Length: 122
Image 1 (cartoon, rainbow, N blue to C red):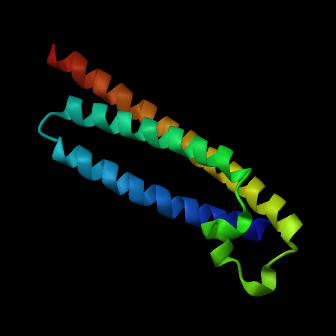
Image 2: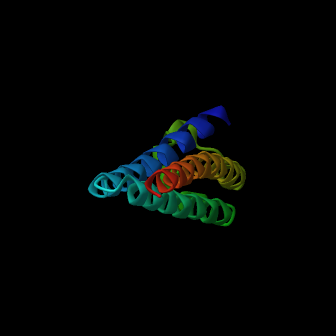
């Protein structure tokens, strides 16, 4: 099961890294106004957290053979389909929710920084 957790962590981390790169690039584009940059970063990371929550809910019903995680499991480590379905969906659910919590925390920090910049401009 720990092997599945590592694979799930790697696949979700890779997807979140691409999303974070896009959000960071957008924020750099708005860097002329730090308040707007952090507001947009806070909004986009909030959206990312909600998407991760939706992905977590969908992971419970998705066929395990149609996940990215299934592609990374070695043929020798593949389990019987019924058990693999339960294990993969459970691990992906937990992993998505963990990343959603971290993303929500980052979002709260960005909203807080945007608030501080808004206080400083008035």
